[in-house]
Length: 258
Image 1 (cartoon, one colour):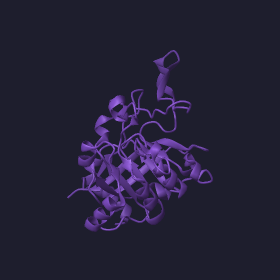
Image 2 (cartoon, rainbow, N blue to C red):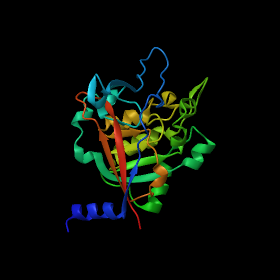
Image 3 (cartoon, rainbow, N blue to C red):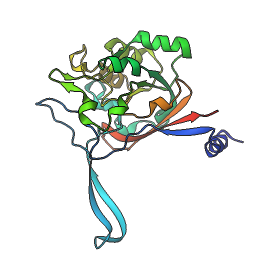
Image 4 (cartoon, one colour):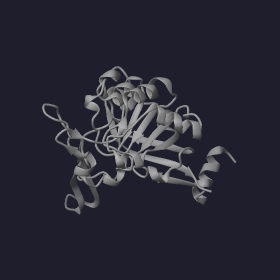
């Protein structure tokens, strides 16, 4: 039996489960909100073309509009100025869209402090317990934020000082980009950076360092609570948009079940 035959058999018999890490994409999907004078992304919208009627008697279909960075989505290097000479989303090698994933769970800390920042020490404590970060893999940062995904106000968690959502501290973002074998990071929040990251040095360090290093981001993930700390395989499938800075994505995880 080949490795692929074994995988198909495991999927068929349930010893490998598929966990959907993707939030539903609709007109209600929460959106990033930038202050003036910056341009904001349009939300996702469907426009019906026909529904088994005079416009198309035997078929139903729609047109859709929306920004590249709406809902569960993929950030390509060219999305950020530090990666402007890097890959657009159509150029990302498919082999880098599938890889091992580790899950660092800081949901308790984020519940107590929505501005909680993951540190190098946090990651080193994880690797001391679970082993090294995987070569060509993903670090998924669980904060419990997916529970807020049906409520724009709670999801952005903004007040007069701006949004308050968890993320990475600047040194951790730099270290993950430059000194680890990861290809990317994934989060449950609206972006890979913390809500207060506009005030960091550099501003938005996860975008700046990760995309500048030719690595990737995944945002607005769900169901990370269903994954083990290690052992899952992540599959990210963005649209192959030429010159695209990113794309809505279907993100899946393969998880072994005993």
